[in-house]
Amino acid sequence: MLAVPPGGAASHGRHGLSSGAKKTSKKCRPRRSKRGRRRRSKKSNRSDHKSQQPFLPPEAEEGNIEYKLKLVSPTQYRFEHLATQLKWRLQEGRGEAVYQIGVEDNGLLVGLSQADMEASIATLKKMADKVGADITVLREREVDYEPDASTRRIAEVLVRKVPDDQQFLDLRVAVLGNVDSGKSTLLGVLTQGELDNGRGRARLNLFRHLHEIQTGRTSSISFEILGFNSRGQVVDYSHSRSAEEICESSSKMITFMDLAGHHKYLKTTIFGLTSYCPDFAMLVVSANTGVAGTSREHLGLAMALKVPIFVVVSKVDVCSRGTVDKTLRQLERLLKQPGCNKVPLMVSNPDDAVAAAQQFAQSACITPILTVSSVSGESLELLKVFLNVLPPLSNSKEQEELMQQLTEFQVDEIYSVPEVGTVVGGTLYSGVCREGERLVVGPTDQGHFLRLRVASIQRNRSACRLLRAGQAATLALGNFDRSLLRKGMVMVSPKMKPTVCREFEAAIVLLFHAKTFRRGSQVTAHVGNVRQTAVVQSLYGKEELRTGERAVVGFRFIKHPEYLRTGAKLLFREGVTKGIGHVTRLLPADQNHRQNQNPY
Image 1 (tube, rainbow, N blue to C red):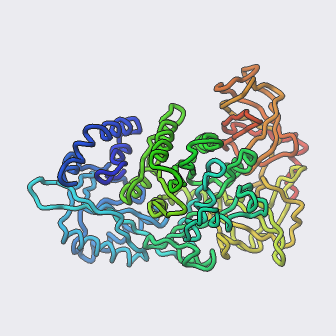
Image 2: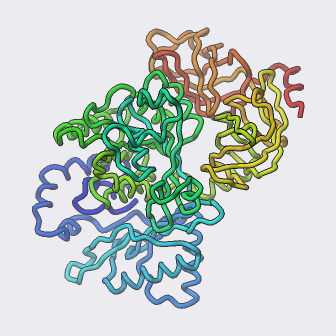
Image 3: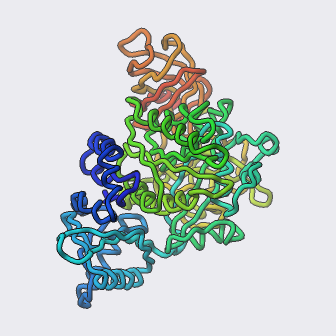
């Protein structure tokens, strides 16, 4: 989408979005060889610009990116029109917009003189003030539109709304990687604002159980938040005393889900990926051990669930540069393999971080790679720049459509809180949820739904009156009997008349199986927040399946019925057996059961 800074390791990215991943990978190989060395030997960076075609992709009508040739001394009527346009772009980006100044609508990089650039940015600042937003200049660079003319520049400016009524932009990032790769320590350093001492001090605040502190290994899912204000500055626990203060000061919130790295806790990691609907996945790889243990498995799971992945190589302070380079080469080989088909994008400076974040969200084949140290703090600022610029994958229109639907809340966690009562945590899949709203929860073991009332809502540990589709929160249910609840249930509007099923059909592909997959096989099925053992009832058109084969398969839950949606992603496993697919058909219980399943 965007022109990439000269001389950066990501200099192939500008063409990648308009020409496809194959063209991108072809472009990046020769630039690292003789041509790249010749360009670096030039006297100045301006020669690097001359060798590139000064184009961006044409401006899109929708989305949060706006091209402006210049914004110098607009009339009052023109200024009002520009402010309305900015409001639209902010709405499209759910509170964020990117302005490319010095660029024509067709993507031609014309550039501006220094005086015109300063005047344009001043006008953009006034526009932002009018709509309640702040601006941050992400980067400026020179272009040579006319070789004989004076130096001209283009600027890339981030506009972000000042938070109001807790409606900050919230992105969920699942943290994956092998055991002992430094996931929890990295999150502790990012969210607490203090470097680690080399012995794991930074991760102690993330652990939820005594055995995690004793072993240093995460076994449960924990959540940590990192905020950015409207000017792009970090808001963490070093500046704020509580999560509530971070929420109040932030325009953008990154919610990290620290998942388990040990193979023993794989089911917890899969549950986190399928149930909490992460926007992105951060794969943490230790520089001294490389891609080892569950790293490949976690990468495969994220790709199977179509979660965009970026890679952070940690612990670069404990090994030589040669070891780090060896790990990076191993990563590049893995990502370029036919099963992955990714284009690795090394991030080595702030310009690279800005370009990588925007290209990463635009193109599924781009995989940014950052190298950091939680002890020395090396390149941690680059990771923060990357996270600050990272745009949401869904636009406001998609969220509005989900909000128009009936309420559906997925129950992922259940707690008992003194003086509050039963509390459930999860994600609102569709609709809106308000304090005092009456919903039904189920299905129970008999397939029934039970009435309840939402007493209060908390989002990121602070009170909230209204929950919108796609947001995660905890709901207090008062004195509702906790024993009637379990993970995998849903809370829905009584108007929905939810149907439940014990049997369903799915189109699957068998990723791996040691022998053959046939009728009678038992697997653990993960569908959204549902996790239950299912038995294979039928294989349509085939007697058995082997690795790599596809089929439509009938499954039956062995314990109790569940609430499923047609089209939902399915991931199943049993030992080394793994498969993915999607639900194609629901087979409700018998007619008598259906008549009795909704006793509201």
